[in-house]
Amino acid sequence: MDLQALRYFRAIAEGQSFTKAAKALGVSQPTLSIAMQNLEARLGTTLFLRERNGTTLTTTGQALQRHVDRIFAEIVEAEAHVRALESGDAGSFVVGCHESLGAYFLPGFLAEFFPTHPNIEVLLANAPSAEVRERVLAREIHFGIVVNPAPHPDLVLLDLFDDAIDVLVGEPFTAPHSTVAEAEAAFRRGPVIYAGRVSEGVSLLDDFARLGLATDRKLVCGDLEQVKSLGLAGLGPTVLPRRVAAYGGAPPTAVYGAFRRLHPSFPIFHDRICLLYRAGVHKTRAWTALKEALVTYGRALDRFT
Image 1 (cartoon, rainbow, N blue to C red):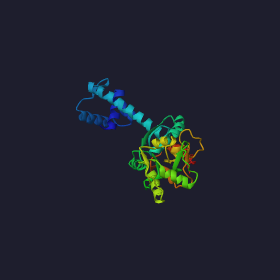
Image 2: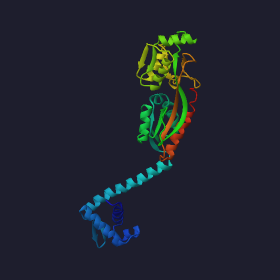
Image 3: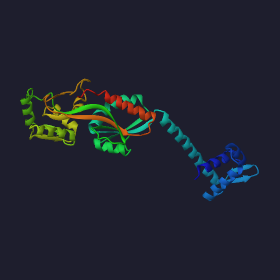
Image 4: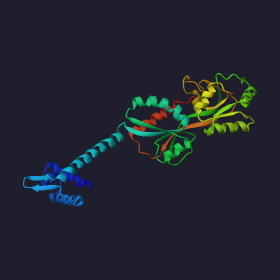
């Protein structure tokens, strides 16, 4: 149905007069008459009774009026909502995170962000970094917080902080490891604990093997939290991102939290943590507020390297 015709219909119904409606709308009376004839023909019904004292609605006209009133109320609400999104601080956004960032970055960020931005809704999606990147490109995710992303001409990448995957031991770990020889022996004895799904940790172990340092005792875990728990129990050397080791109960300046490096001479795998979003995206005030807050919080996490 033509929205203009519905506006004409509404004006005639409210004023109970074609003449009054034409004057209020600034159009000619024949224009209104033709529009209403076309509307009645489309609906297959008579909408108005034209009488000497004015124009009244038929039963079907009254039914249409109820629907038209709801339609225009929805239009007013939609206009107000869009204006609020454009110029106000309200909005709903999907933030996608690499699994370790979802667990160890977002809690602190959201605890700071939500109290000062009560009208911004954040929906979370945890996935491997490559999947988050693809979903940002597909416009399924507004912001991605990812590890070592590959560049793309349709993406904006902003560096947040640098991290490293390291071989760490928890405080209960008692095997001697103050010298290189002792640390190498402790590594070979194992068990070396790591998350099999974290490709960067697997790459670090490959680096160790290329240096002639390998172990036959490995304990493969399903996630980083399990690796961390076993490491804190002193079970053996763990392969962990420093951000994961430091999270929870560690002083703000701690690089390793309750862990320490097996030996400072051992190699590490450098991680680059980035915020990414689509280039050319429409930037509302709420979008900008969330982006700037993510960047500010992320760039304050500079203690891991």
